[in-house]
Length: 258
Ligand SMILES: Nc1ncnc2c1ncn2[C@@H]1O[C@H](COP(=O)(O)OP(=O)(O)O)[C@@H](O)[C@H]1O
Ligand SMILES: CC(=O)N[C@@H](CCC(=O)OP(=O)(O)O)C(=O)O
Image 1 (cartoon, rainbow, N blue to C red):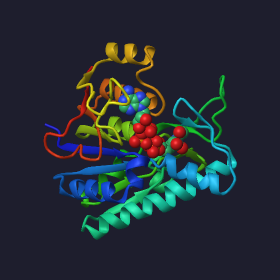
Image 2 (image 1 turned 90 degrees about the horizontal axis):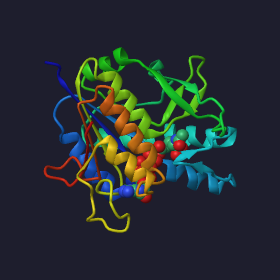
Image 3 (image 1 turned 60 degrees about the vertical axis):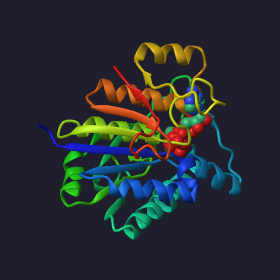
Image 4 (image 1 turned 30 degrees about the vertical axis):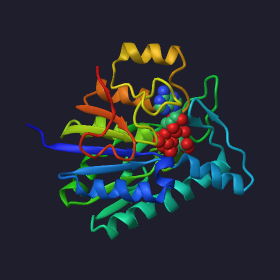
């Protein structure tokens, strides 16, 4: 039997809410066994870009990343957000280390090829340095991943935080029984975006296709669910979506099934 590993992704809207983040991190440090934290921060990057006078363009929940926005992203994801989360974990007596893809050559990606859309400095993960991650886990250190990967040549690329989490979970499934959690501002996938009580308890690929076609799923939920299905189809044991309380017992959630 492989040992268990939990991989948890927290979204930008959760990170921005001090109280929710703090309560989430309290639950996170209580989790037993090896664990990995991945974070986004899209909202903060948009806010900082705005202050600097750079316009933000998103297509299907993914950022068009030119040179200026890549600089903002490196500062915001790799610096401000990542280091603040690591600091908070240390304050809760959980040893942690902040990483982007270039650190320890941990997340190697290829720049997304230009088809109809040129996403700019956006990468898709191709290789995960599982040995390096495992060496941190063996020391009881929690790796905290920002949404930045790196090419073989060390060029930093913006990478959707949900993709980072699912690619890490998929790769680590060789060594572990993996459980992947996506925590964002909603309690799960909603039938009606305006009704918090309309959480869909289970989604399989057939239902997913229908929900996309009927536009029940839009914006950031599109890449999130794509990543959920990638994970469940490529070896991840369990995939759950919920809000900042997802790690609590009996939390409402959406479960992804094959
Ligand atoms: N059917 C749906 N159920 C829940 N959220 C949805 C749905 N369709 C679109 N969304 C949007 O997707 C968002 C989650 O994606 P995203 O903003 O990328 O989250 P995060 O930053 O937490 O990763 C929700 O906040 C919501 O606005
Ligand atoms: C390529 C791409 O779109 N990258 C995302 C990475 C951040 C992210 O995923 O943030 P959330 O989890 O808060 O949405 C972006 O720049 O918005």
